[in-house]
Image 1 (cartoon, one colour):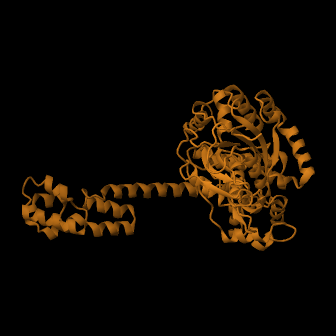
Image 2 (tube, helix red, strand yellow):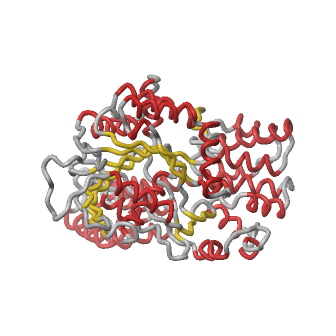
Image 3 (spheres, one colour):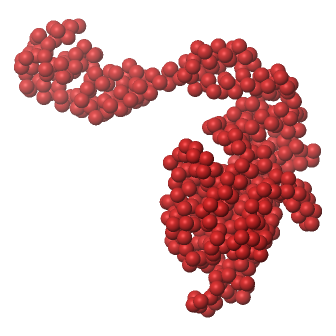
Length: 539
């Protein structure tokens, strides 16, 4: 077979078919034949070569993709350097090389003894930029903690809770699964210990973690419905079915409230249960049991969010799937009209304030660095309650999770953030006008195990122990601004029976209680006419 130089020097002696073969064999390229033959490349042969190459390019690209190797893509680029697929072929080569490099790295990580601190340290030292370095450090910390404090079921539970509240963990469920499996494989806990963990708290592990443990053979479905574990069969059936979750997208930025209505604001940090509580309230408002009817405003910014959230909660005895989490830097406006039992129409706008808002208030006053999304969340609050504030009457619900007092965010507890929010509210004076009621709603009160007067007593003691300063601060605002007789009402709230954090057997009574309060305290009109001079709030 001739060399490239021989072909170029004797170009006029070769047929188009021969040149095509040399091009495909990688000896020479068409651009080289054109540029280096000093005009001796016969025009008719060149046109024939170009035509033949053009006709086979599509087939050769398909073959390169099917083979999917660096060599197949390189051959294609050499044969068709001017092809529209050349750039795609180069990207494919880059991806294959990156995958090969990652495979080598994964192999290195898989070979590390995860139970040996020295082995983990050597891996970190030898591979400082490897993505598994953070996980290696966590494992070292876990092993050191076990050496210092020992290991038992409580240690595993505390570890799981720590992972769940660590905002630096990108996939907490995957990490929790690995922690549990690691403990079982290292014989730190037994199979019965794992069942004991689930029995202690049916909501400690998310459904996705439990499902993965079952798929990998660490649990069985039938074990979960044993009387001693205490899980309703319907939850396990729902888990086995693998019902999909509702997804929420980031809405358009809210600039102002446009509807003449009673504005009902819901405040709360991420994971407080605020959005789920609001979904339950919207569901009951819509089902005809308390209000005769609910007419949703399709023009409001959060119309889709309102509709999707409300349909998740149905008191039909069937297990529903809770939302996986709403965008914590987004504020949603949900406008609708409620008709009460007397035929009075109550225009309402519920505002689900960004979950990160309370933390944003703290960061702003503390002069800490804020992300663009955090600044936007705070700017939205400024828009609706300060700069573009309406003269509508307003109600505020502060939502706290019962049992969530120890949860920390960037080293601070709910208490520190709530106190900072209180200072921000006082400084901006956003409650001084048009505010008629402030409520403190405690979610997940089913954890108390009590009801009625006993529940009221338990919640009163709980607030005094964990949130007394915040509660007193709200009441001070109420007295100063003459809101609700200077009192902040405590509202117990529960969705019903919740299991695996994601599944719910909904009970509508707590949500119905809130709907009644909104109807009682909100402005309304009759006969389809807005009466001029009518006070927005009754009594």
